[in-house]
Length: 52
Picture 1 (cartoon, rainbow, N blue to C red):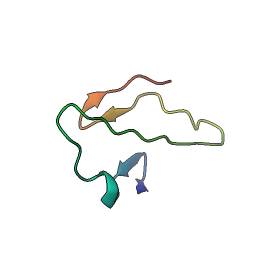
Picture 2 (picture 1 turned 180 degrees about the vertical axis):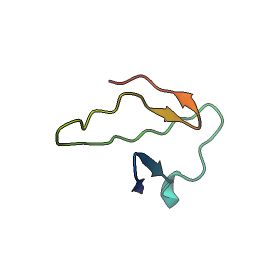
Picture 3 (picture 1 turned 90 degrees about the horizontal axis):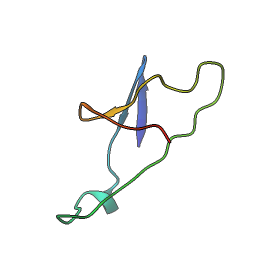
Picture 4 (picture 1 turned 120 degrees about the vertical axis):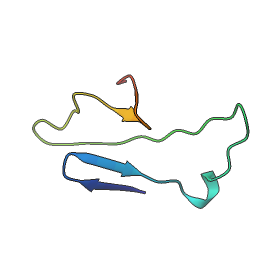
């Protein structure tokens, strides 16, 4: 689930993705529309992420 608070988004896990094994991975996507919709930067737990 993704919730917006001003300029920030908060993504929380779904029940099926709460337990990820060591070395495992999980991903998610975000679709945005409108003028200025592409974020200047993105981070996860304070770690910068690359835009794709």
